[in-house]
Image (cartoon, rainbow, N blue to C red):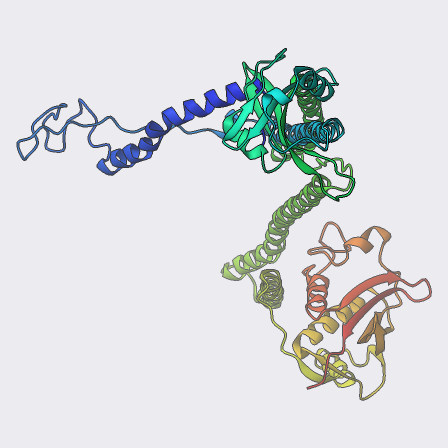
Length: 562
């Protein structure tokens, strides 16, 4: 069992006594709270009851007995704001460090105490046996009278046993009817030998630690066996010796050890606080940076980023924050671009619709005027028809764009022979003689026929309208990144596309004439063509060939044949 020093034992005993005294009251608290919570809080005092009458404290119950109301139980609520993260980190670090230091100190104290006492006890017992064996005569009778043992002999034996100066020796004589102690000539400590201890010493060497007047002592006792050369074992003598050893030196060493351990624990506490502050700073600084960055991000500064330091969990958190902030910035930028595009789209649609509607309105007014001549009516009729046609084409393009934007457009894939599909696109529009076609026969692709027709018609129509003959359509099989595909090019021999227009040529309502007065197109054809190409999972690009003119290149995956 671990024995605490006197300086620690007393406070511990007082604390245990206090806890035991309050234990019954603490045990009754949960039952009291449960009983109050089961009764409920009831109507507040001084407020009207549900029946419109006051129900003051002490009013008779419906059964004719008083029903006192207990006040509502208000359990304390600890807000997380009251205990900061710094304090929690420091407290946890310090508690772990101090508990570890205390545990190590208690173990060290116990081991040192046990080692010290065992060493002292072993030395005393060994010296006692050796001294007794050398001092007592082997021919001493088993039972001798007190008169046969001289006082000088007893003093000599006592002096031999107490050679170290801190031993007190008591001698006794074994008789048939008991053990009788010799008179103590010069007692040093005044410690009496317990009778049970003396009886135990008759059969074996025994030891016991006792306290006398607040001082620790070690008792060692045994019956003396004299050495007999002819025997392996000694023969018993009528002498019993008891050595009383003061443990004051060991107690003083243990007190010194206790003070050293307390100082070491104090130093450990100080060092733990310092390390806890450093560790808390290392944790809280990145957290504060993240907090400031999150506040700035919420304030609209979308370019806010956090510096990533190290490779720990906080660094991973900072990287995650930066990725999230980047995604948020990109998403908001995309939303703003879509918003701007929507505003521009509405303005462009309004402009494009206004032009044919204005012309049709003017021509309709002309036709409705009774004073207009027949020749003017014949001239206005075809113009109204052309305006309606352009308006119909614009509306169809707008409907197609809205379907593509909303994601409701779907592919209806079929196995398509490319050469036949190209011829079927050119012939109904009267472009067969104006467009040259180059490509192998029998090349099959799994495409949506209607959308392939829209792609090719828009590209060829744009080349015929803005380029110069001859317009050449070329198609061939081409693999990209391990995927088999169809490459389709539409080339004209005109002046090409102006450099400023190349990045914008597939945008909506983009025309060569910025004033939109010289072109009859809707400005949506190339945008629809690109959307249909991307719906197939393909790519479209445009460049200027100095030897030819504008070259539009479309790549579509062939797909797997049904």
